[in-house]
Image (tube, rainbow, N blue to C red):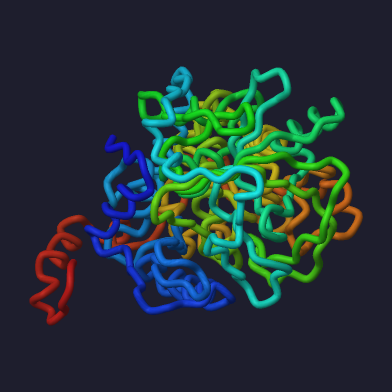
Length: 498
């Protein structure tokens, strides 16, 4: 694997294949940056690197769509693939397998480096010197309740006993020159650690790091188990330690190559209005609510720093890629660990993290002896009880005989294979985050809903010799005819590849 240790190395690698658009024209942080990024994502255009931002001092830059899809032929997942040390041409299955395989490896503790070895310490401001307004924080969407500084960074918190450090991605809104409003879901790891500090009557120490090693946000979005350190998992993934450096004012270690690091404490009694914000389900935000305040007491940054940001909303954006793919990888790891014959899991990007496909090996019936409803129920029980399944309300279980990363094929398989009256297995009162728009008020408050597994398995319904076979060029014609057509494709007057 080719481990890129800084976001700058990663940007250079993407620029080399034509997937970066450096914008030298002045762009306003007030909605314009967000709209440009949204348009670039919709077109799968190169990710925009903004270098002149209205009202922001020269040198401060912003990067949109860091986890978006690419329009480069054969390199759809280039941004994610290069971040994970894979070739730019790696497909979605390869990314999921790479992360899932690493879950079986021993954790590798991080390496703590000196301040002199850490680029994130090139500039240091403490106390009254802190001024968050110097950063190019965008007002992203037209109805957002404020400017969102934290959409693709890492929130880093540590338990009071120092045994567990958690790296996660949760949104934060700019309040003023030294305060942020924080979304801290109580049942996520950030919220669990926040509650431990509350129990001691102390504000929660925190660091927020932006522009970190490019694989880190994907790992921060991966639902690895409680008490496991994401920096140690990142070390396991790459086979070498992650480089961290002590923060200036709190007892937390931060990514050494980060572009910007904020340090401070989250209050347990001070709140401010946060939101609304357009979020991953893909709809315009409607309401804000009171959220805890983070008081920023120190800021360190690289010269000419880069602030990456995500434009959440309709698919496909970073929540669906950098959140969805790692969740699929964790689901694959969990199902493998239970001995189930699963070959791939895939969070359908175009379904905005509402649907995960679980593809079984075609011989699953022969190897397990289980009927489809039984294996579907086992899969649902495992995934919906896990952190990987917390935000996924719908699973679809199929044989792995088509490309599950292609939404058109997923739709065809669901419509043609799932039985209308016998093809669902329901899981009442399953844990669920509160953001899907289909949830009722009581479900949002309880963080629970009914979840479903759509059973689209076929193998137990037919004798092996009579199982449905897809009718396409590969399966519907004799091999000699198919080969002749492919060889003579240009002779028929068609251009392009065969």
